[in-house]
Amino acid sequence: MVTLKVNGQDHAYDGDTTVPLLWVIRDELGLTGTKFGCGKGLCGSCTVHLDGVAVRSCQMAVSEAGGKAIVTIEGLDPDGNHPVQRAWRETSAPQCGYCHAGQIMQAAALLAATPKPSDSDILTAMAGNICRCGCYQRIAEAVRLASTGV
Image (tube, rainbow, N blue to C red; front, top):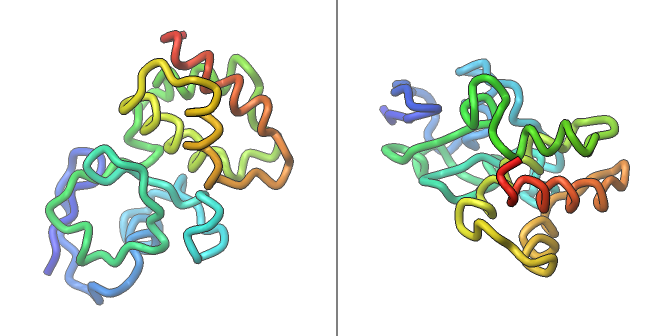
């Protein structure tokens, strides 16, 4: 049995501990904001925070996440008012929106580690998140805006 602390709540998981964390978050806990994209950790749609660090939940076994603080998009701010979420709305960053939970989680981890990132910091941190709609300029603009505390 593994205890997962997701969005501040403990959850006991007694299934296969080699299954990716993504599927426990989505299928067992019903937190569907974290998306399946490529399944290889390359697109960033499944990004969550593990002890404050952005990780790809499709590549992390449940056993690796036990006892660590996991934050999903639903737990970033229950009202959707984290500075990154506000900046996303203000800049109209998403188009289709599929990748944006992962984008927001990656940006929030960046800003937690580097509150005033340079453009280079933003591009480097966000490079592992793919947006099929090509909203990269709006995403970078939103990250810059969020760094001001919106």
